[in-house]
Image (cartoon, rainbow, N blue to C red):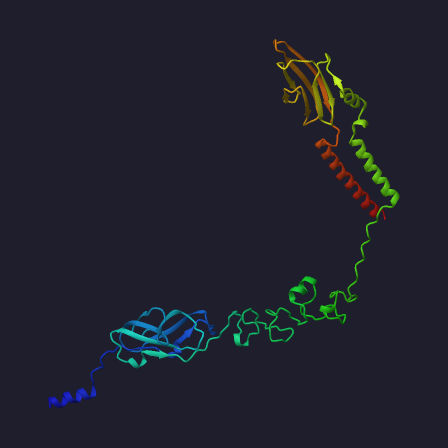
Length: 375
């Protein structure tokens, strides 16, 4: 009788089932932070994991793109009967189509139902959008230049944002910017003449290039006026360069007095051979044993009885002669010679003449310009 009661109790009141661990992940619970996937963009990928068993479970979830794991596996820990746990990783969208595989692994305690431990998404086809303007490169008329309005004024299939000639009139947009015409209108001023053929693309009253007035030739002074200028130049040069015969009276007399002159005591004679050259001769008879020393006043000396000396500069120079005879008797004599400054062979005068000529030339040019303005 007792056995019958035990069998009946087991039949009517069975023991409760043993507790079990069971995590679950579904493809529909995998999503991205952006609804539009663009190749090359970094997005965040989210996934929800559920505990559908009656025991607390820990483990980790891994994500794969094809056979390649994406980033590190994520640790999860879900209580029995609790809310799902949402995890995420950052992901670079590839250029080609792809899908995502999520796997639950390393559960503790062990998952008793492996059929819901993986989830494979459907295939995603990302957009290829090089300029990130929201238009797929295949449909973008400027794939490398952002232009979400896709404006194409001339309808040539190339958007204005990357078209060098928006209105296709033959003038580039850069040129039209320089001439200030409208790059979206082939006839900017509406005068019926296309911009490339219009000399004044923004003036509806003109389209043909107007010739610039020919500059008048520089008037040449008449013969009488030019002759006066030449005479003034000649007069100025003549007044500047004074030849010996036209020198001031005191200079001329000085030169004349130096020609064929003798010293005060008739010891020596001298003459002016050229502008800066003099000849000197000893007049006193002396034996061959006498010593003669000339000092020309410019640092140059000579021991000859007859000598010619050339001065390098103009000015007055004290010339002295010292003679010592065989008995040691010394006699000396001196005089002053004058080398004139105003002479063509004087380089300073020559330079001055050249500068004067340049100044006169500038004066002539100024006169001609003045005549042009007056005309």
